[in-house]
Image 1 (tube, protein in one colour):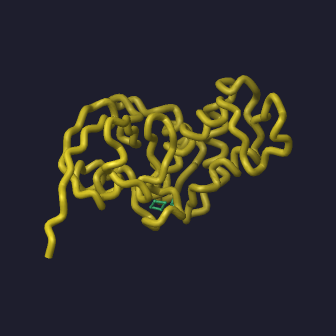
Image 2 (tube, protein in one colour):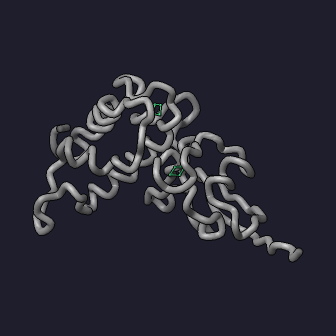
Length: 180
Ligand code: FES
Ligand code: FES
């Protein structure tokens, strides 16, 4: 049996530099959870269908289960653990509590990271499948757009109304227009 080749990986996670030796087949999700013990990021389907593993890579949301750790060389990863400062929760975390945006909470870290990535896409005016006019100079912040843009994150508890309320509440004003 041939020995697998391990590689030195250097990356930044939640502002902290890390240097770890990994096998080429290791997923980013397993690196976070099993090697670095950042278990806030959840494993649901492990095949890109549920969004429970969503993290930010250089500010873009991705499914960590579909990404190889070695692809993250030199990149900046943000997980749910990186969003709060001490006892101060991120406004999205507070809003999820205030709006009943969860029941069991298993999907919540992925929902929150996905919402952050979604808003960044919105601010860059990236269209979604709901965007009627792809040539429009401005894409309005609507509840339908929000639902579509968050549709890659499943909630088995069905807390969708609270999730949409929480995201809309936080970004009212920040997006330059009223929440839907
Ligand atoms: S665990 Fe990655 S998408 Fe489901
Ligand atoms: S709160 Fe339970 S899966 Fe979403």
